[in-house]
Image 1: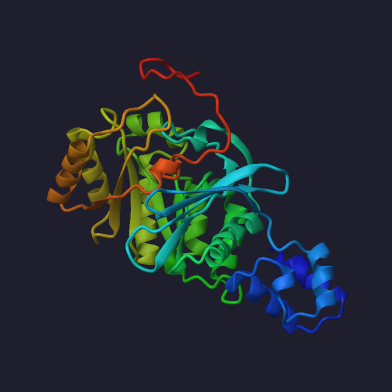
Image 2 (image 1 turned 45 degrees about the horizontal axis):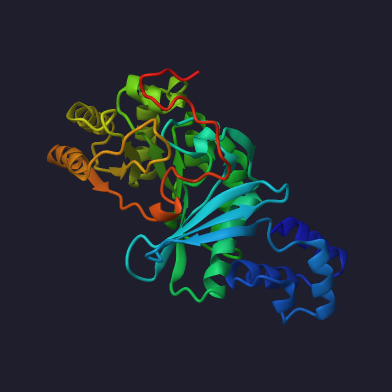
Length: 356
């Protein structure tokens, strides 16, 4: 919802100041999906606002649910008919749910193992479109009587959040505003492939929001192959900003590491990763999340469970905090790296051929 537009519409109609809070609470906190259902507001005003200020900037085109019921994926239509995907997840048994939200239509980063990166960048989302994904899932849970609470938000959907830093930072204000979504900063995470200027700005403005760095390799040659932006912001720059983040926040930082068979999952890669962590972190605040690659095309191969466990064991023996993340929603293409809304042009399928 565009709160500024709502405020202007209410002022134009000489409505009392409490009316703004009343509508915002109904939308953001109560999950009400129509003006008609806001019965505490006069009927005539409801009709006028319905025409003047849309309740949401996103609308569901499709929703898929995983077989185990712990992952829901929505294709959401925007004002210009473009689509994004957003996911609702229940990582652990219990009452708490997490949503993985998008910040761009497509992505310009070109990470070779990510389906979204194959689309290229179409445009950034607005702050309203980003925050409305959370509103959508809260309303979806209410309307479908899904037990539990949506309490965690991760910016790990489509797009690179710090490549769209303006609207992303504005959307964080909406998420943390107690009069709107009212989330705790420690329940929100922003993931980046390593846009260093964006990381520095993010750390200055939102030091209590979790930071996750998609690392995927701890030597420049391998990382540049997998994550092309490493050419602009190599590992020495990432080490510097991670050290600053630890000093600035004193909080845990997550290193995301997608395991690709034969490319970054060998002992020598684990050794480099352990060295990278220890060169930055003396307070055990860097935590490695290993992600077994979710297939999106034929350019890479999925490692075995045994290979993933060996990689984890090697890191643990060297004192690195590490877990293997459970991938939810693979049966609905809703897991990490699988979000996509159109059929992309896939580069050469064989690893022996060069991309052009």
